Length: 74
Image (tube, rainbow, N blue to C red; front, side, top):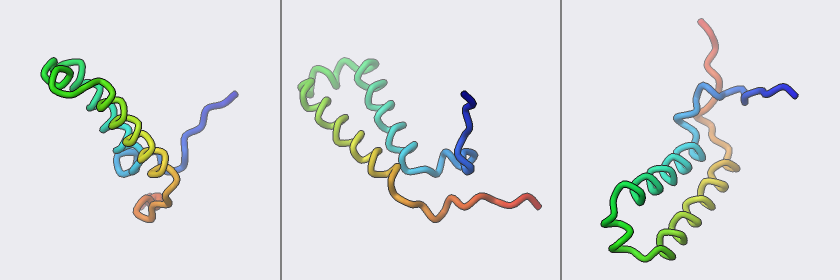
């Protein structure tokens, strides 16, 4: 099995889905690092928020982005 990246993998920072999943990661890091977040917000609320952002990531992955056309080598 050969692993191949998508043709525009070098544009990863512009992909909506990558941005959404990075936000999910930041939420997880924040929850671990900051006890205040765990104390101030119930766990179920953080779970629902993570679920909604993950659904947004799935949707973002399905949206066609026109600003990701591969750049031609000069």
